[in-house]
Image (cartoon, rainbow, N blue to C red; front, side, top):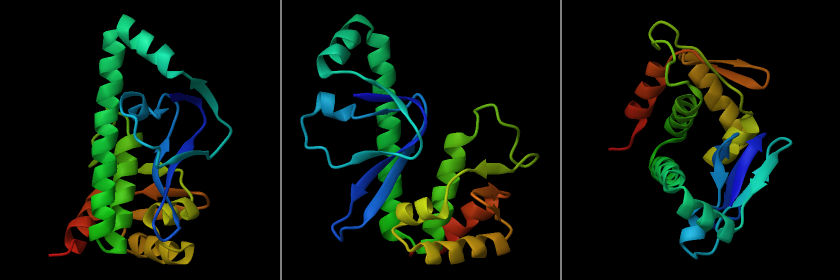
Length: 187
């Protein structure tokens, strides 16, 4: 089991087409490979550093001993696992069913939900969130070319949902992104 102490890493899977797909971006305090401790399924993803990382590596035996001694820690990890699996299932369902513009809006909304503090101000009063993610990473997350992703981002900017700056995306209006998700869903 790996727990990220510093940095960011991508959880990457390879589609049947051979293209890499960024399933999730991990940040400090988040873990990877919990599921494999409890279920001996073959690993279908890889952890790829986005920046310099520092990891805590726990063997299966060390984790199981810790979980026995501190059941509340095991419950917290299982809760995180359930939340992440729900999020990944949501991403996979949406990525296979929706048009590209809706998938992009969906990813941005999920990213804002993940980075926004629980006690963030009311989005109606302070709706701006900075998303530090490159167009290349977004393209990989959406299984699109970087050029197509750039064109879609410009559509979102024209709609007033985001503002593009070098290396960052400023989400200006979550309501517009949510509307694009809903209006773009297939019947």
